[in-house]
Length: 183
Image (tube, rainbow, N blue to C red; front, side):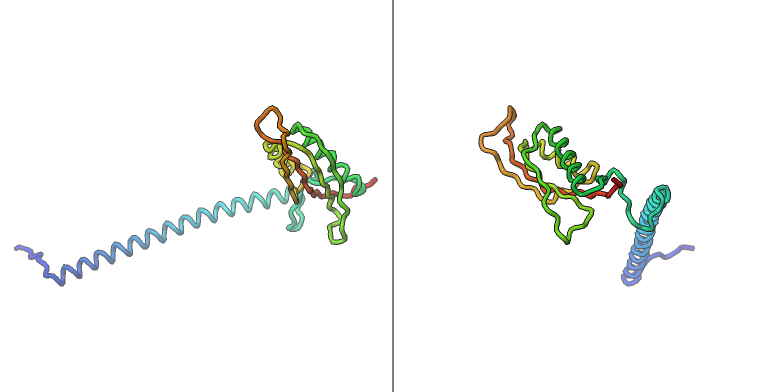
């Protein structure tokens, strides 16, 4: 007995279409499973991160959903004037670490719309660009938290140290937060 496996044109086209449909459906199912697997993995990572953050918040004493900055993030002083002096001392120390000297500084008057826990300082000094980059990083990445609100640069004519970078006259407007302490 012999099998006749000859197909006419219509049967061949139908069989080809069926094979293409099976391949497309299989590929679609594999794609859907891959997407689901990736989403499940990402969800597990997010759950793990959330669990770690919740545990850290419980260890820190829990604050009812509010973010807590460490005590070192704030200037601690009984008055705003003393907090301003602490900020000036801190900035002077950072500027000196970059081999520059503070030319002038002042504490702008506070306005009524400003928060009562903010201290502002305007500082002017001369330094090279690379030292300025390091200073701004130290200000914004260190503690207490100091925010650079404005930056003004002015090149100084003819003033160069032994290196190739020109000196810049830098004016920074800074803001920091302070906590009132008992005097």
